[in-house]
Length: 487
Image (cartoon, rainbow, N blue to C red):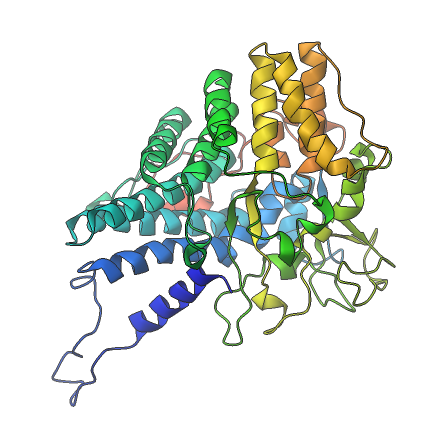
């Protein structure tokens, strides 16, 4: 049982139930009802407010349908999947025919800015609560970490953004976009503030909360994204030298329940299938087997191009892709053919065993950051900084775990910076395939045009590197918010 989600469910129930009833609803206010005027009064309220931000990480608008469309399906790692006429808005993303009215853009814009709003409320109000000062500082740090995460995803999707770091009054609702550089500066500040306060680990009852290692890992990734390889190396090495993390020994089992919150977990979204519901996610369902035995939706089909990227004998290919006729990872059944689907196969990393509450109550944790990625960030940054020998050490640690004792995936011995860079990029793709990293990698590497143009002829350089700002948001801004080029 993942305790953070028990707290979230309890908080939600308590927020909806008045502590005392009233005799005449027309004449009296319910006593004990939580409102915006009497919330943020005590330590429990600070906990509830913080948990409410974590709760959004499992939300449909944050890490489910549109999210996989705008990370995997848009890239060369995956195609839409499912049946040909199902979810045309994702087909538009797959084919690069979307516009500013596409459902996916408005969905994630709403979900991620809701997370920012909740974090802002907590950051603004928790300092005024009379409570344990260390715990107060930790809750504020957790909210800054989460706000940074939401903004980091948004800025890579949309570029310039409204930068909102406090609760807004009604006359402030119409916000212009600020340069992406300013957004990145705010992200870095939030992550630095979080890393200064957050603990290295938590007791088992609080598994899933943001740690110092998670904040430093994201700092490394942010700096890698903006091309500051010195800082990327610095923060990746902080995570490595902390001694907190390691590689889970069996890659194939890493994405099964036994691999959740393992030594390799830097940050992952916690999901639990409870009988009463409320703690699961649809992340698993939308990518599950469409038909017997899994009854999922069948989206996010691993692409031919991704399959071709794996080296001969790489065990990660079978751990990433679930084929028709293959026995399910728990041995309970095999994948039966669905004749409605062309090129049928599935994202095995999103597969979960049978569970209570149906597929919409998926219990699979969403692995947002693994230690293997920290090692690959370190390898890439070290190579760019001229330290080839140490870069090879971390790259080959990832390959050694992947080979699992088999006579495959020999150590890389390259010393030319450019050639080694390509080898590290290859390793990122096969190690992190179908984990929603590929599109962002292509963007930061400056290769989206080169890679996508040969696969997707409607990809337009200078336009499709960014998604359009939802037209509804531009309309609501009264002209203060501008559109991205080409839309």
